[in-house]
Length: 112
Image (cartoon, rainbow, N blue to C red; front, top):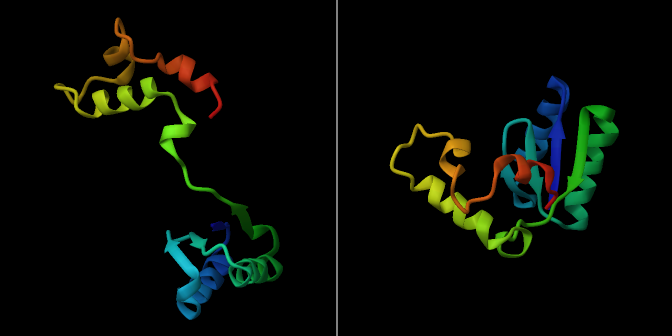
């Protein structure tokens, strides 16, 4: 996928127009950003926006996030346990203290 993010009002208008005219090439729209299909035509549309609006348009190539290869089992289990905690107001730091769940400060320093 190609993630196209706009940083000005004219660029957002241009993105909106491209999304309306070429909806078959748009996987998802998020207001000031959109995911274009990973086709040559999708790249053409994204590059057209960049040419028209310069640095007000950022284009990034994305890849799907596979949670089973990107993170350890402990992180997935901690996320599930935290989402299903009894007291919803408990912050993760307190929730993880004294358990086998990963420490948030340690997780913040590790790259995927």
